[in-house]
Length: 247
Image 1 (spheres, one colour):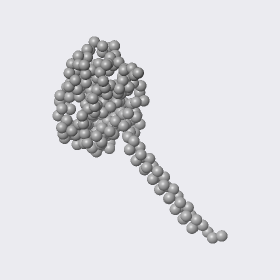
Image 2: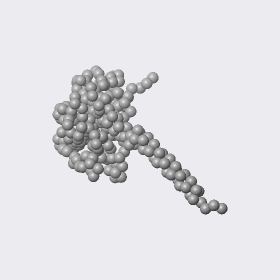
Image 3: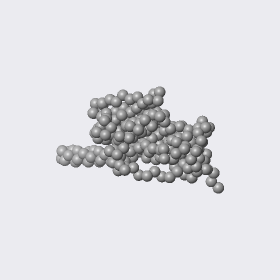
Image 4: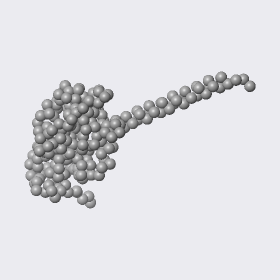
């Protein structure tokens, strides 16, 4: 017999599950519906997700996901949102996944980090009502990436932190290579807009972190360089052999 996990930490027990859709005896939550501009956003979202899963899941009790539903009102299941990428620290990640949804009052806290990727159908909401909601819920860091360079968000990259319930901007700088970047204290990473692409950078080493495709391409390039080196050595050896004086 399988024992269902209970999803009500003591510090959130005062919030009642007013809708039977929720609660420790409710079935797993339904899957989210596809987003209208998903194909446009997915290359950036999946790139960031792969890196964050590799980097952040080394931390204990860390949850990272994309486009799954976050519920924030125990009286109304329709009051919810789907961040493009979000992360929460010091939570029971296994319980959240079994639940098939992030229920704020059951988890005990909102996500700590949210990244939205601009699309024509979502941009106004991302910088308007969704931003206000994230502040009201107490999400500490909110980042926005616009591949177009700012046509939809007004800026290529925006990072904000919550201070006294109000979002304040992180400094956004321009790197020598022309990339626009800002530092996320929660992730301990730089987020970079670079020629319409979203990059994550180690702030200590300056290394641009690679997803699995990037790692494969880097390995292929390194192997090609080794083959080229070996071929050059072979050619030089042949030339030296030809120049060898006759015996």
